[in-house]
Every structure is written in structure tokens, then in C-alpha cells.
Length: 186
Image 1: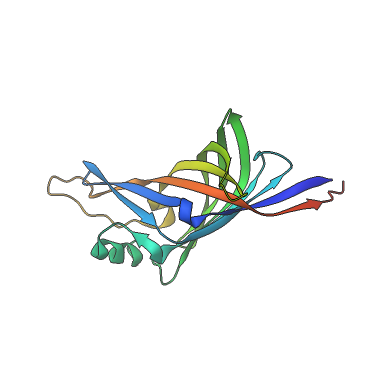
Image 2 (image 1 turned 90 degrees about the vertical axis):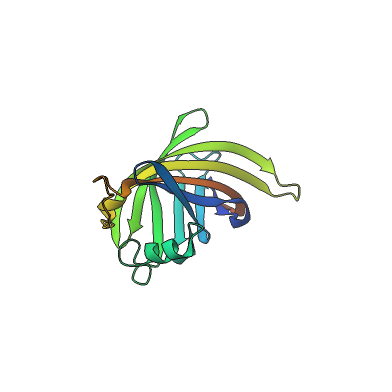
């Protein structure tokens, strides 16, 4: 008998951020304000956890309304056709100490590709109301060209206006939804 636990994301204590090079000299940072997901674990710990994550593309926020509107159109996310970004893990492995590698399938603009993410486990703590929470920082890089986001603009000096790689940073807190015993049959 193995215990299965489902952990859900606490959106009030989590954030999903991204950075992309602009004019080759600096980064533009943005976030997605609406997202949902869970982690399903077997037994104690997070090794081999199954992670699912969904982002509402229309919740993009770069602190500039005109840019957000452009990012939602067909040059980038095409949010009317593809309103969600999804991720499903295929592997969650402890590398050492609090460091994990998570591999999974990212679906963006209708294109699904495997990506590898770094996960740092921040620990666990009771939130003061009897709810155990776990914290994670997830980082990685996604090449936007691989997902059909090829729009770019040349600068006056001939450089690219936007970088191809998007840096992802997610700070996630999860809380237990349901703990249940599940019998595993060989």
C-alpha cells in the first residue's frame, strides 16, 4: 500500500515570471497572473512526482498594456486560438540535496515539446493554520522559435530586437489537497 498525496498550487503565494532579451542590452520581465496546477506524490518526498500546470495566456502582464496586447496576438501567443499553456511532467528526479531535474511536455501555441527544468526545493512549513506547505523555485529556458513565435525586428544597428530564449522563473507554494491510501497492484 502506497500513499498518494495531491498537492495544489496556492496562487496567493506563487508567481510565474519570464524574461526575454530586448535590444540585446537588457531584459523585459513579465508574469502570468492566472495559473493552476498540482503535484501528485507517492509515499514521502517528491521524487517521481507527477506535475501538471496550466497558465491562462490572457493573464500576461509586462506592466505595459500595448506590449501585452501584442504578445497575445498572432505574432506571439495567439491567445484567442491557444488560450492556455500546459505542462505535464514525465520525470522528477532528485539530483542532490534540495535540487531536482524535472522533464516534461510543454504545450505552447498548439506545439508540444519536451523541456527540462531545474527545481530547487525550499522546504516545508506549517502556515500557522495547520496546513503543511512546500515551496519550490523552478527555472529553465524555452526557445520561443521552437513554438512558432518567430516574430522579430531588427535594430538600427542590425541586431535582433528580441532574444530567442525565454527565461522562466516560477516560485510555487503547494498545500495538500487530499491524502488517500491507494493500493498498488503488481
